[in-house]
Image (cartoon, rainbow, N blue to C red; front, side, top):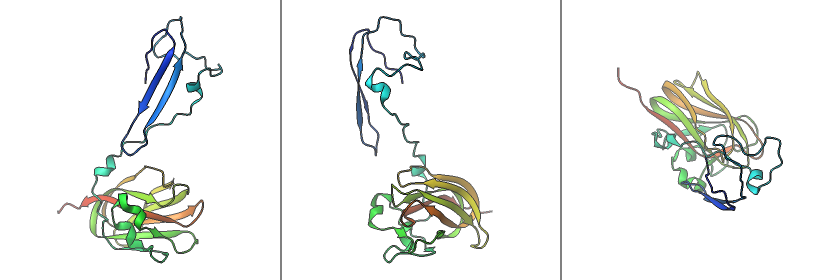
Length: 208
């Protein structure tokens, strides 16, 4: 982003807004500079000490495009099982597909023994494009695998990641003739493995 200002001192106000995120506003106090400004060239030498307040601010990249929100979730209301569950936090709770109301119910492991697994039966064979897991805790790091199978016997690992509940990422992969999807939680930084919703993105296999 290039901000163009006059050769006099003043205040530049930057505002940022995005759906689902808290809006933010930053004020940049500028000082008069007589020297010519060259577009594309840093005006502060690399080794210089920051003079302006904005030079010391920690910036972050915007979240990636949530293109996957338009994909079809084929796991809604499909039967699920887990290695263990707390009372009231059974495996089927994670196939509601309603991410906006996910705080009302969830799957949570019944013990702290690891690994723990959760599995959904899609009740048919599908072409899959990926999964999205809405983890329970924003402050817990979950180390997990996503596995797929056509027969609930032979399994293939299609994703191996570490995420917290704050992560917006989706586990994207492309597999055909899949009926079962399993999430294996190998480790957690604290607490018990658990998530609110698992979305499985896919479509029905084309007839031959």
